[in-house]
Length: 374
View (cartoon, rainbow, N blue to C red):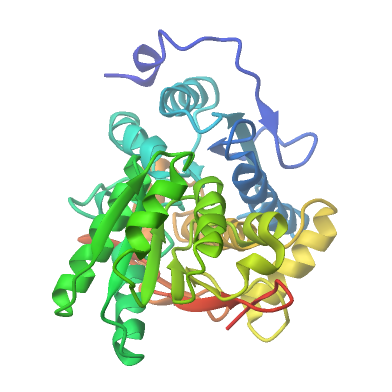
């Protein structure tokens, strides 16, 4: 099946945003993006857009890859799986990209994975830790961040160290919440621990009920597996319930959203992160990100922005290894030669039989000043 037949039913009204230079050379390397630039996860999409733009602008200012600029072609999917599929097919037919960059979220990525195989175009930096990205191997999917299973094991190792054994889990009734909850319960079982799990709807409108059930057994810790918009009301209800135990959540929770909405109530929340804290100059890739974002003149430092910056670095390194005229096929081969590659204090690795990406996971905490610290 060719790309044009795949796109036959895609509406032509979607608009393209050229996120790199205002005008690109005819020989530009085209890279497609489908991001949530509207809808409930707009802040995530904008952070990823700005982080990717910052690195590609830096690369283009230095002459591009092999003397060719990179042109980013970006469509808004509003975090809707059907629109994500439409966007990928539309970009594939109209612009014939060498790669896609920075897909986001469990449901949208699940919808995109078979499309990547149909189009035979690789996607770098799929922002989700779901195991479906790695097993079974999808030749065209190159995740960068560690998996939710990696995050879960990190948290479980920590709670064992501090002698926490009575645990409740509150999870969202959606693919993301259930996926992370399953990874967490598996890690707990592997460590000889268990937990009681309680469900909330995706917007956590029933947070009070779930929290009341979760704290009834006087757990030492409560884990949240949900996105920010659900985590906020759950954390509010935990405060109302006078819960003084440990509170843990996973990297997809946006710390800036939580601290902005909760203020001091967010203090003490521990969060796994799959990239370093995006401040300070100690880690080379963080310093590079902050400088490039300043040069871009748009966006504020964030975990998602740094993650997108790193994803763009992985893509560019793959393009450099893909020969003088990169194609989707040669890019796949180039990426699969990146074994434990150092991006500036952050390592990724791919090989033909395993597209692992990074194993970086750390646990950070929101402190008394509302700042994320280790």
